Length: 293
Image (cartoon, rainbow, N blue to C red; front, side, top):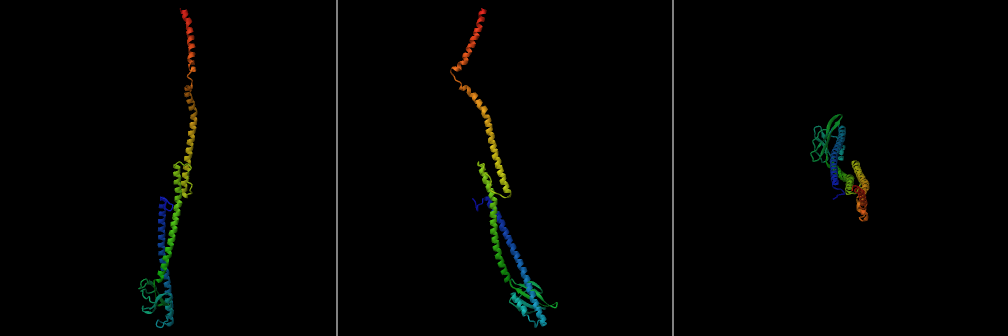
């Protein structure tokens, strides 16, 4: 029974290739997700720190212009936080809030850096407010996780599509390679079966790569050697039969010659020839007897 045009060996090879393909796609997909996760986190952290630095610079300008926090105009600082969709809080050196915007307040990070806020899935970035080399306060921004979630959703979707396409291509390539490897083996098997049943002209004619091609050539060479051996054996048998035919025919003729002789008057001729001999002997003895007498 053949499945996808493959026999037992072909199905096993295809299964092995498919397992390798699926494992490779899974490993690459997980690696891609981890890499994207790390990359997004690094990119978001850098962006948040950049926004925090910009807000701190705007707050420092307002502090320098007003000569203190009491009359400082922090509208531009708050606008930076709103543009980044983050909750912004300006703190003095004592840690008391001077002004804030947005609804995502929280976090415990002091000084420059980044930390997780008190809200679920929130991230906090902060930067010091420096005026003439002296820190006069801190700007803290609290970011929600909506942007990161959107990025991960898009990433998951694209990686899933890419993994499915890669899996289909890998399975197709596995089937093609399996057919490429099994076809010459199948051809050699058919040729060997035909050769065994008496078809001495059967040869492995399917092209094969690498060692399979060498195996097919070796099989064809063996078949040619067997054919030459059979032909030489027939020639030798015919020559021996021809050489033995002439003396056997002569021997047979010698054995059949007495049987072909006639049994009539000619057969009695030797006896007649014997009688004169006997008579002549008698005549020779006759005078002797007379003398003796």
